Length: 307
Image (cartoon, rainbow, N blue to C red; front, side, top):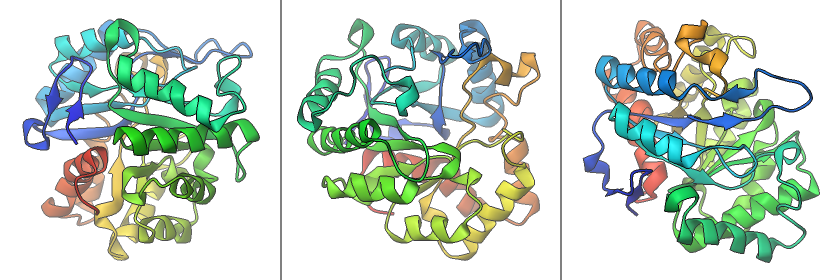
């Protein structure tokens, strides 16, 4: 499966130079209930940070999991990609229910599937074509009825289109049910990335998901208000010790302007620089680093082989 980018290119994995961020956002607006900070609109700062990450950390590809209801801007994302020199894959799907657009995904899995297939076939704003489904959301250990429809429809759209799928498991919870729902619609586990697992303290869950064949996303690195990075390292090392180095994905999940460097946040380069040094200091070798910073994400995205 080729990698379909925001600039309209269809790339092979060999065309992607450098590291991959498996779960980011480049433009969105999640302001609800008076949370005026829940937006990422500083396009110039995002562009500059990605360009810096390309020069300083060899960033080659960003997977932008901004979907329906998150009020993204695919046209702005394309400009960010062009001006930063970093390839970007954009997404479609439904986040968790609080952010579903009015009337979506509806009550029919079949109709919801057609909505997503139309996005994939006809493109989003300016005809920009999604190259992944995500971040498909649920909130809690059990998905709501609407979230279940979104998950099932996204799985069906992934099967029909050949795209892979990434989830939002709120605070790391609900990933087991997500995997069951998605695979129940025929989506192979190696096409699935289960999100925010670095916020889950249950190492058994991580091992179960990986053993089932899915990818385990440690994708909120640097968000120390949720979890310390020292603890993230310990959880990641436990997965490595269990032999699941080919199942781990890494990212920052930058989702508001306050996470950008000039606002005092960690920025897009954090997982590529400071967090990588933490792993090196704990003895993680070059071969494993290449897997978790590049090869795993490309394997998941293309689905060309199981981990």
